[in-house]
Image (cartoon, rainbow, N blue to C red; front, side):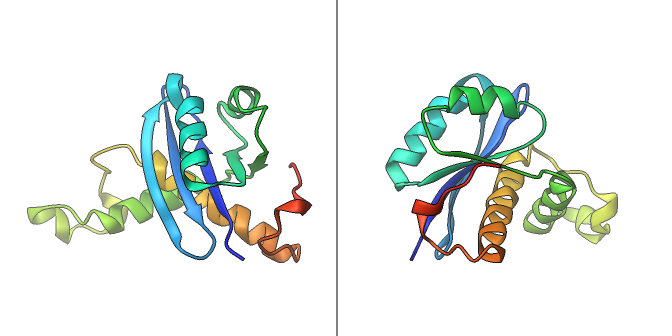
Length: 144
């Protein structure tokens, strides 16, 4: 069964948001101002029929969880997600001119990639559920 989640990488000034389906992959991803993030998450969850809101457990997590307390919220470990997201972003945005020749480790992202972090958080959520033997069944929701 397919399960759709809205994943959030909350921050002080901006937040990454990704709508991810277990079966269909990433449906949407965006970077939004932190001030309007909770409302945007609600809109996306409603529009895509998301069953869970996945939030990274570091900067801004407590505040974001409080703003979304009326929804099913699960926190996941953010450790090294920014580094992984940076590498994915640079792979997806190869650069122009001579920048294409530089190894990824020497390049700098030309924009925010918080949405890539959110995408990784959603993947971690699905991996955790699979390792626990929980497929698309949202009746067995658990908070972390």
